[in-house]
Every structure is written in C-alpha cells, then in structure tokens.
Image 1: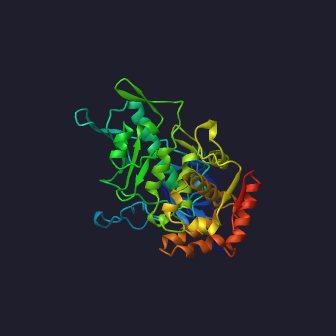
Image 2: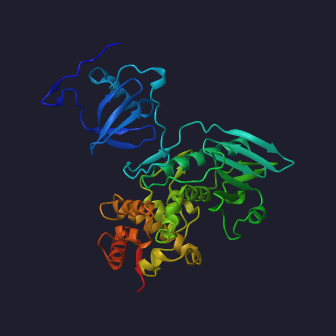
Length: 402
C-alpha cells in the first residue's frame, strides 16, 4: 500500500483545496471544500466548518472527475491499526428521521433509479392487485397495465424523494411492514365505501397512515379490462396526498395545521412533474397560476383570481381544521400562496423564518410560540403588510379584513 506524505506549514496543510460547488446525482448543490478521501468516498467541509462524508457514486460525473484528477494530492482517510474481525466498526446506518434544515434548496429533484416493481398478488376473484416499489405498497381492486404500475411507482418514489429533499424537516410517515400504503379504487363508490369523503378526489387517512385515491382522480383511462396512462391528463391528487403521508405530526398542530399542512402539500403538487423529475426552480409561477386561475394549461386550479380577500392573518393561521375545510377553494389556495411567500418572498428569500418555525414545532412547542419565529419581531399586522407587498410585486393583491 502506497502512503502519501502529508506536509504542514504553520498548521495549514499544503494540500488544501478551494471552496467550490458540489453537485450530486440528484442535481442538489452545496458549497464545500474537499479535505480527504479514499476510493469509495470523500469528506467535504461545509462553510460552517462541519465535515460530512460523501460516497463517490452519489457525486455528479464532473465532481468525480475533479476528485480523480486531484487524487494524488488528496489525503487518505485516517485509518487506525488494522482491527480484528471482532472489533471492525460497522458503518452507521443512515438516519432517515434526521432533520435536514441545513441542506441546500433543490432546483430539480429527479428519481433516476429503477423503481424495482414487485407484483405481490393479482387475484381477479378477490379483486385484489398488490404491487410494491422501494417505499410503497399499493393495492388496487382492478388490474393495472404494467405501464401504469411503472408510472405510478416512479411518481410515488419521485414524490418521496422530493419531499425528503426539501430542507423542511418532512421526515415522517407511518409504514406497514416497511412500506407506505396506498389504496386505489376503480369505482368512486368503492372509494367512498372505504371511508373516502364523498366530495374529495383523494384522501390521506392519518389515523391509518393510508392514502386512498379513486382511479377517476388520476391520469389513467380504461382500455379493455385494464387501465392505461392518459398522457393528456394531469393528476395533482397523488403528490398532494403523498406529501400528507410524509408530513410530521407536529405540522398538523394548530398554528401550522391548515394553512401550512395543506399549503406545503399544494406546493409539492403544483411543482411541474414529468417522468420522475420535479422541476423546483421557478415553480412560484406555477403556484400563482394554480391558486389564482386554472393552473398550467388549464389543468385545474383554485381559481381565486388576482384580488384575494382574507380574514386577519392570525385568525387564518389559528383556525381549526373544520373551519378551514368549510371554504376549501380559498383556504387551500391561500395556504399555498402564504406557504410559497415564506419559502421564496419573505426576508432574504431563504425560508429562514419558516425553517425556524418548523424547528420549533419539532420541539413540541405550543401553537402560538412557533408563530413568534415567523413574525420575527413583527406584529401580525406588519406581517400582513409584508405579505401584501411581496405578492403585489407578483401581480397578486391580498386584502386582510379587520
């Protein structure tokens, strides 16, 4: 084994690399400095001084080429004396529940892996057809064509990846035997019989941790005895409900419940999606189109218009869920716009206040204590004025009633 010498001058390594942007295979970017590595992984030092390991296989091709080009100057991982089999340390498991508020904001999230679909059961007699992908098990009462199964699996996994990539601590979701559960129904009446609200296009049953959707709400069409994907249709129902399934229970508390819990689900759902890829960059226009009109290419929307009238902001944020649901069009649409405001238009446009608010929710604080972090020294009236100003620049006029 070749050992490379490491030279120091006044405590500074002569092999130090420059701070540069790094991109992973999902096109997520972060500023960091290369500090050491081996043939399997590298260690990056973030701008705040933290060091994080990163597998080479997860890096973009240009970054892997950069590492290889500089390998001769790269200090190897510090390796102690060769341990015995009994003391060989195990690689710590990835903590899927870890909060990710410090991660960079994505521009595009693309699911590029094989969804590894498994057909668990197909029984026409029982009207039970069960399919699985990496994170999901979906049960339908009618056989689905393989193209539909794959299309759904890619959408499920891409949405899972998108939600978990957003640096908003969306880290929950109850699993059944290691999978998130989705129930699909051929007939709307069967969906209602199973507990789906009669006036809904889909629902997340929080007590059961199950997403239920009738096929009539999805971009599919009947062909013979099966269903095929309909390229002329677009479905925002599944991404919306899948986001609910992954949303931490803390985000359903009063103060976040309603305006944010529905707003973030709407935000994910309106983000342009195609073939496993969510285009996050510039999706503020899609949020506006969906909330104020009929969505991109008239594919559905809240149709609120550009002049929106709401009750006082504090009342809107603290209303109970039953009140929120009494006027779903305006409340869902405004939840989307206010959530989008805190993501893109508030302060320096870095969602700093929203992240502080969500962190406080994770600490099991009361409903109004986290809201103080959204206010950040402002009164609700001042925050209202900021929202009005922020959206007026985008052509949307908010009015908050006294």
